[in-house]
Length: 123
Image (cartoon, rainbow, N blue to C red):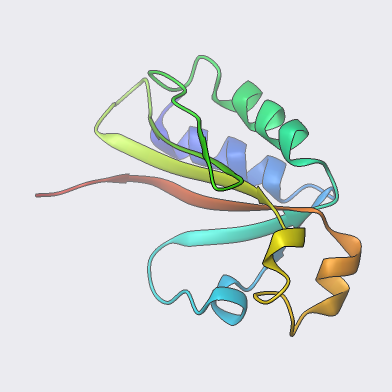
């Protein structure tokens, strides 16, 4: 798949009913960039498994790393490794301060996914 097709595959899954896109800027003060934030009631490990399945065969490798409760990675698209996407999943519960202004999200969702679509890093 091309980088655009990989992007569309991931977005199609993250825009399915089990996920909800939320305003990362309102929650974390994220500004600019091209990252998108999604929440889900699915457990974090299930989300990682689901995302891994989407990436399987479409990226050069899956270097998922876990630190501080977050599982994340940067993935080079197999059809054109200059294009790299980013994914991170973490549990929402430890982020009560960040979500304080959004109590409904804290009640309904357990996991967040931060997604950065494929881009080419130019020096």
